[in-house]
Amino acid sequence: MNAEPSSLQARARVHAALGDPARLAIVDALTLGDASPGEIAAELGMPTNLVAHHVKVLQEAGLIARTRSEGDRRRTYLHLVPGVLSILTAPRLDGAERVVFVCTHNSARSQLAAALWRDRIGGSVTSAGTHPAPCVHPRAIRIAREHGLTLDPAGTHHVDDVLHDGDLVIAVCDNAHEDLTSAARPRLHWSIPDPSRIDTDAAFEATYTDLAGRIDRITPARPGR
Image 1: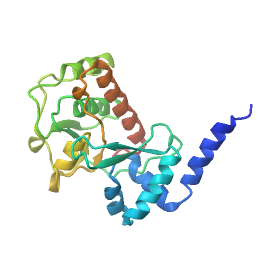
Image 2: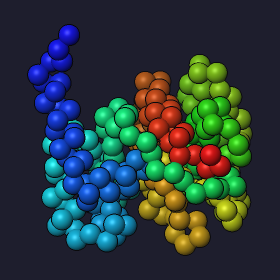
Image 3: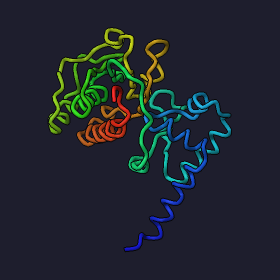
Image 4: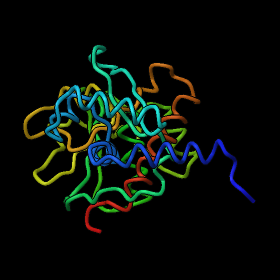
């Protein structure tokens, strides 16, 4: 059976967008984590106006999308559109002794991320917060349980009490990414909205789905492989 013309056209746009080395470098940079256009420019040593041009082409091809930071509202982050790059292999990560997921309150996103990583990848993993809450959010506990995962209701920690040399730090919220500096600077950033702002089961389920997709995408590049 022949493919639908619209499907062929969409695939052709993706292949055309990836045909430029600079755009492929931007996609590689976004495969493991989200970044602002300025961060992309700094990482790749590329002028900001050139980054803006290439980002426009990648957006028009449906490869990347842009969201506004929940921290500094003047800033936007770029992220890959799920599923579009399923045929690509993620860049390999250097080895790390432990993975530490960090968000603001350590009550939902970082907790779910650590539980998912432990379940799907294994190895040493934990979570922490820049301003930890007294306990894990009840909806996060419930969503985790529905997916066969277990969260410790009282298991929140401050990032200063958790981080060690050699940790792979992954920020799963914009505020943590923007607040952490120096030795605690996250290696990767996943720009995931805070589900507690909406505070519905659907919002927490969407967070779980987002995290699960990102962890599945990073699996071929995981440390120690």
